[in-house]
Length: 144
Image 1 (cartoon, rainbow, N blue to C red):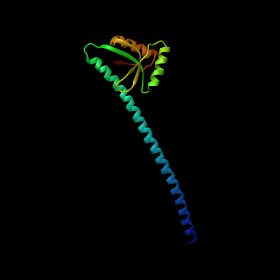
Image 2: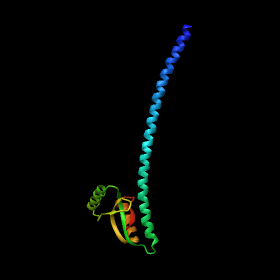
Image 3: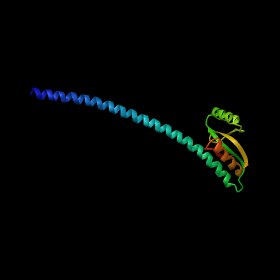
Image 4: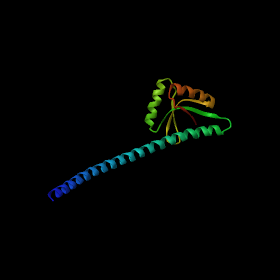
């Protein structure tokens, strides 16, 4: 009988420690889940900003291509910034490299930095290749 009560007491103590361990694991899992949720929300916000930037690119090129004669102000964009000061700093950097950089405020709230503007799409495409080789590989054309 003593052995049985001792084993029963030992089983209860072991179960108690296992329960504490389970609580700690459950708390840790909940912390991980919260961290994953926060990171997911951050990534969604970043993707939305990128989506808005890409839509501005698409809209400007569609507007240029819908007109039968694509003539206008075509600007090679090498940087796109939400914060004005970052755009200003980038313009200074591009000017030091010999470009005539300028800031174009896009309708989506971005400050676009152009290193070259042309009156024809063909000329802008030629400069786009230079910009992609020498300035930034993701350079693109914005139509004013």
